[in-house]
Image (cartoon, rainbow, N blue to C red; front, side):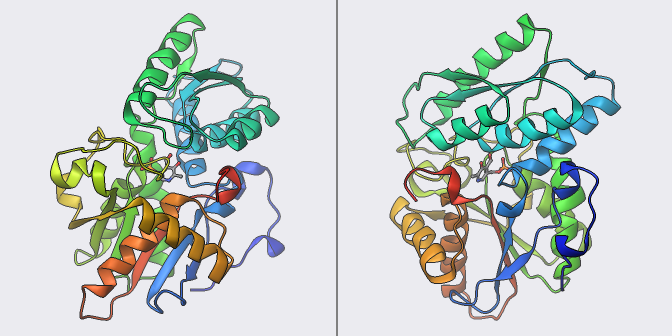
Length: 313
Ligand SMILES: Cc1ncc(COP(=O)(O)O)c(C=O)c1O
C-alpha cells in the first residue's frame, strides 16, 4: 500500500515521471474513500498517461516520425501532456483549443513552446466548453493536420488512450488496493473510465464501476441533454464516447454544478487538495453513493487534475 516517491528515484527523463501516482485517503469525507491523485503527473493531470501512450504507440507503428508535427484538439489537459511528451520526442506540437478554456491552460501550452490555435465557441461560454465547441475545434485541427502533413492524435477515437489506463492507472489502483469494491470516475473521452474499469473487472469481477455525469447532460444515463453547459471541464460532452461499453458501468451517478463546486472547495479548504472540478464531481458522486449504501466498501475515485489550471477555483 505504501508508494515510494521521487526522493529515492533517479529518473532519466520527464516521461519517467508519468503515472505511479498516490492513492490518498479522503478521511474527511469517508474513511473508506481514496482518491488517485493525478495532479502530481508532470503536466498536472491524468491526460499525461494517454499523451505518452499515444505518442509511443504512434512511433512504434510508424505512424509518426521524428520532427513531424503533432496536432490535437484539446481542452488543455491533453495539450499539456502532449506538449512535454512532444518536446521529449522531438516533434513540434500544435494545440487547437476552444476559447472558453481557462487562460492558465493557454499559458502552460505557450510556455512549453506549443503553437496554439484558439477557436471560437459555438454554444459554450468562458469556463464552460461544450460538445459543439469541441466538435468545431476538432474540424479545424483535422484541417491543420492535413495541410501540414501532421500526425492527428484524435484522443476520442485513438485506442491508445484506453490502453494507457488499462496498462497503468488500473494496474496501479489494483496493486495498491486489491480489496477495492467500487471505482468511480467522470467521463470525457472515456479513456480513464473504460481502461480502468476493464482492468479492474478482469482482476476482480465483483468490482462495481460507476460513471459520473453532469445532471443536465447525462447522456449516458438518460440519453437526453437538457443543458449542455456545466462546470465539469474535460467531461460531459453530451455525446457517447466512441469506445463506450455500457456493460462496464454498473451505475451512473449525476451531480449538479452546485454539488461539484461545493465539494471541490471542500477538498481544497478541508484537505489542502487543490484539484479541479471533475475531481470534485467524482468525490461528490462518491458521497452520494456512500449515503445510499448500507455496506462498508473500499472506494477509489480519480482526482483528475490540479486546480492551478483554473481561473475560478
Ligand atoms: C479535467 C479533466 N477531467 C476529466 C477528464 C476525463 O478523462 P477521459 O478523457 O479519460 O475520460 C479530462 C479529460 O480531458 C479532464 O481534462
